[in-house]
Amino acid sequence: MENKPVKASIKPASSKPRKRTAEARAQLDPERWVDEAIDVLASEGVTGLRVEVLAKRCGVTKGSFYWHFKDRQALLDAVLEQWKIGRIRDIEKTTSVAAGHESQQLHYAIEVYGASRNRKGMSIELAVRDWARHDPQAAAIVEEVDLYRLECTRKLFVASGMSDAEAKSRSLLLYACVFGLSLMHYAHFDDNLADLKKRIAERIIAS
Image 1 (cartoon, rainbow, N blue to C red):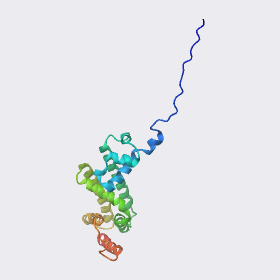
Image 2 (image 1 turned 120 degrees about the horizontal axis):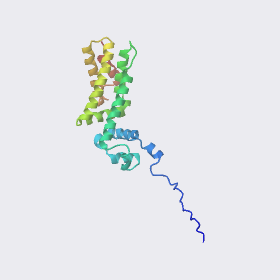
Image 3 (image 1 turned 180 degrees about the vertical axis):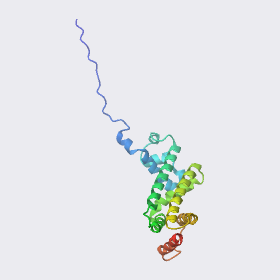
Image 4 (image 1 turned 90 degrees about the horizontal axis):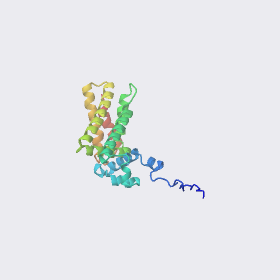
C-alpha cells in the first residue's frame, strides 16, 4: 500500500492587529508626553507631574510612558530642556533687531514679557522658577536662561549708546520689572494702566 504524504496543516497568519500599532506610537511620541507635562506643570507645579496623571490625560496606561522614558526623572529632564530651548528661541526672536532700532526693540521686549495675553507662558515660567527653588538642576537651567536674557538686552542697551555698566543695570531692572509685575495685582492702582506701563518703560529705556 502506497503511503501518501500528508500535507501539513498550515494556519494562515492572524490578521489581528498588534496592540501597539504605528498609529498608536505616533499618538504617544515623547513630544506629546513633554507637552502634556508642561501643561500640568503650569497648573499644578512640579509635584503634579506624576506618570499616572499624564497617562490619564493622554488616554493611555502608565506602561505606555516607559516606551519613551526610563523613569519620571527622565521626563523632568526633558521638560527642563524643552523649556530652556523654547525660552532661548523666544529671547533671540524678541531681542533681534537691525542697527539703529534698539530702543524700539527694548520697548517691544517689555511689552511682550509684560503682556496679559501671555498668561500661560508666565504661568509656566513661574512654575519652573518655583521648581528651581528646591532643585539644583532646575536652578541651573533657570540661571542659564536668565543670564542669556540679561546678556541679550545688555547688548541692546550698549548698542543704543549706554556704557556696559549702565547697560547691565538697565537690563536687570527691565526683567525685575516685568517679572515683578507678573506677581502683583494692580488693576485698580491707576485708571490708565497702559499709560502707566508706558511711563515705566520710558524710565527703564531712556538714555
